[in-house]
Image (cartoon, rainbow, N blue to C red):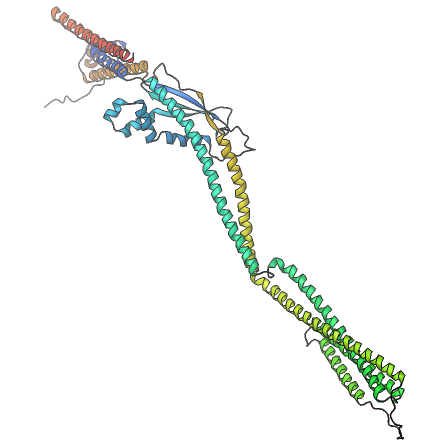
Length: 558
């Protein structure tokens, strides 16, 4: 039967003496990594080129003219504009120019493409806002520009160049922004003026084509129409009066002619017959005047009502009755004859008496005057009728204008609305152009928001990187920790019994005594000497290497 040796025994708890013994047994594995990492840290940190940081502070000077008086044409926050300018300054073209101008990164350019060198330099440039507790969060009073490089003089010159580019870029951006704003508003104003001229021409053309039929001429047309209708009424009454006067003159003229004929042809006619004839003529004249008055009333009614209106029908009937009565009177007057007398022997005709001759001459003169008056009345009636026709045509024209107003009212309103909108746009753009020109003049005089160098680029005296004491301490600490880890691993792998404590703990056997390991003194001394020699050589070599790296650093730095 084979015995199974695969069993495990838990290790005993170590005490301080055990840890000291463990460090003594594995001192080489602990000190070796510590020495190696220490040397590597010192050599690496002193071979690592220094990095100097030069910094400049740029102050943001606010607008000198009060914003309540002159509004700036740039509404972008300064923080946003700084980021925008940083994108322009840190562009590939600008950084390439700076690298070539100052001869930066010669080693990197020899073994790296220019794009990688530009990215390396971009990481070394920082734009940091300088916050102030007294200002609001959306406004920064200043910002800093930092650049890290191994040559402190070149770092200072690069920062100076970047700051000057920031100041120039700010001036150029604000000038361009105000100029483009002014130019844009001016172009828009020219376009708005052309549009206004076009709309004005359309309105003028429409007004010329529809003169008198425009909506805004409605009141004038109504007033003119009312005046013309009043003039028609006046002309109608004037014609009626003239015709009445004409009839009166004609009646008187007939009476005078009859009297003249009676005086010249029948001087012996009795006065009673003459009076009867004059009475008949007067009745006929009264009837003529009545007919004219009825015609006038009918014309006035027809201006407001149609012929089917009852009052108009009544006026027509009265007019017909008056005309019939006049015809009857004319027939009666025509039938008047001297009364029949007993035929007697008439004496022979004798010449007219002197009185009849004078009366005949006066009667003839009166007849001629009445004929002249009758001709004047005829001419007056003709002129009034012509004026009546002209006024009636004008009334029909104004009525047509009034009736056609709703047809073009919408189009005319649209034209006026477009013209008013164009006019308001021109007025608004004119005011904006004035503000933009004032803002441009303000920027031209450097009265707007500007950048001013507050702290010039500093010349660093001590390198910012690397932090040599910290790096060396970290390297030595990591080496010591690595040595302890190796020693612990070797101790865990070694399962041999090291001392009497291990024998008692793992064998559970009482120990009566121990026999020391007997070795040759020469061999022991020789092994110790070789160990000391090796570690001394390693320490000296480490010291030489570290000293050489330090000397090399200071020599190259000088």
